[in-house]
Image (cartoon, rainbow, N blue to C red; front, side, top):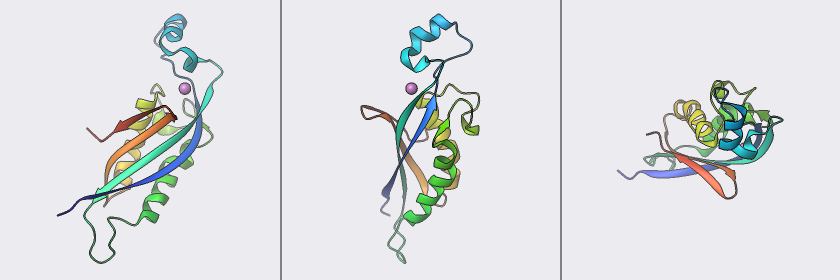
Length: 137
Ligand code: NI
């Protein structure tokens, strides 16, 4: 059975401060640099959501991309766009809002929500020069 992957891309922006309250101010500054700015800063994020499955012989689709678009908007974009990741996003509560932790948080909300499609991979760009990837392992 052929497995085909399809990807939906969304863009949003959000503010954060990357710091660990368990560490001293000096240690936070040394570890996180500009991302430790106490008065926050923002990023224009790009999220690539890849789902996979068999092609349905009735529709010719793995999944209706319209449904995936709605799920990503409802479960992720509405909660994070123009928000502060440290203060306002329930699925990021209690975590250091690094791109790594952000992609894990997004996975936790999206994986069950895209069923019956299977979430295969998330790619989260924090700047145009760097991204993190996660495939559920
Ligand atoms: Ni940052």
